Amino acid sequence: MLNFDSALSVEPTILSVTADTHRDMGLRPADFGTFQKAFLDTLCQPEFGQNSVETIEAWETILAPGINYLSNKATDSRKTR
Ligand code: HEM
Image 1 (cartoon, rainbow, N blue to C red):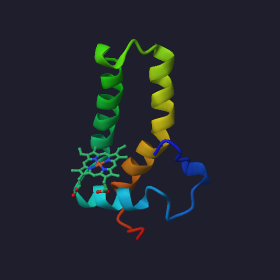
Image 2: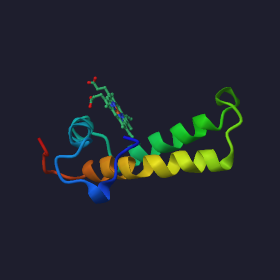
Image 3: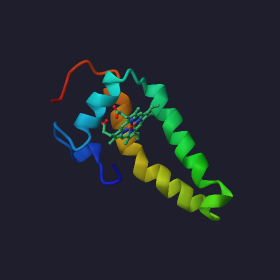
């Protein structure tokens, strides 16, 4: 997930099976936005240390390609496996 770069990926990608299982669960693009927000909000909680804005933004940046890929695949009818 953290190493995913959609620009360099040819199908099937390392996230293809996850995309298929998650689409088959009925997840929609908005669900991945909710997941992303919840993850980043959690990192802002004091239990996870005093993370700087730069740290939170770094997590957002590194997660974005994989989350965008899964989100786009949620509306893609083609199976990759
Ligand atoms: C960045 C986003 C996500 C990643 C990388 C991710 C990754 C995974 C992986 C690797 C698995 C285990 C293998 C599989 O079933 O494919 C899994 C299972 C699961 N995920 Fe996600 N997931 C993401 C988002 C979500 C969201 C948004 C939901 C629901 C709101 C969700 C619900 C589930 C459920 C219910 C399972 C268990 C499926 C089962 O055991 O039958 N996931 N996820």
